[in-house]
Length: 263
Image 1 (spheres, one colour):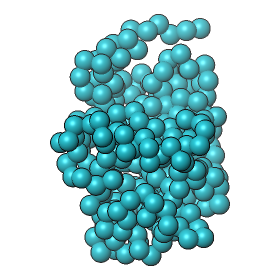
Image 2 (spheres, helix red, strand yellow):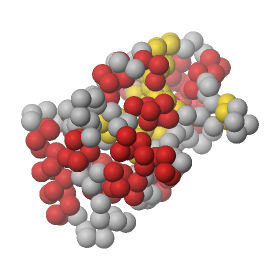
Image 3 (tube, one colour):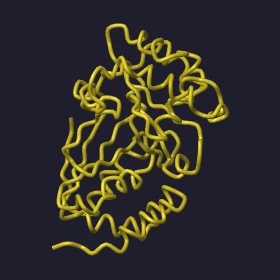
Image 4 (cartoon, one colour):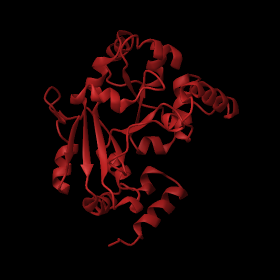
């Protein structure tokens, strides 16, 4: 897998917008999704995998009970993919990983915690359009019918009505699905959110990407560059106030904004 340690803000801009020119459209339209990590050493493990124990067996119990206790009108449609997105959105351990179509939102999450500014951060990028070339035919056919490069809940349910049905599509080769969740609230919209999910609760995206190194790039953000990146994102209004609308977001933004820079 490619890895680049950037040395400046300008080099960072070049990398996060690399290969975004679309010759066919004559426009800048990136095929990348982004994920920011406060620690460069963090692996691409899901919250379900970090739960520990027999998490693959626990997945269906977590979702079943979440659906049982949630409000009946909590999701726009009664599909497993809508419920999975809602559960992830509210902190339930799931096999979903958060990504964004916005490179600056990715950078925000790599620089959101001043307590970790003494450590290198990272932004992962994945070419989700080329990743779709590795999907099984049943999923690939849905994308082709829609002329799309990623899935919605409606599209996913046409190929698989449950997680178990999705997993069975893997056959002998795992795959990654990139799924744009329903606009449950302003947070999902403002973060330009997209989720990845693998063909099995135990399957790790980073290990899958190791077998396809041309799909991913890890951009390491040195600790000494984090303050500059953070301050410039704040001036560009990429802050908790925007990405987490509401009083909690305002409080988090103000707390960080008035924090003193350490030595």
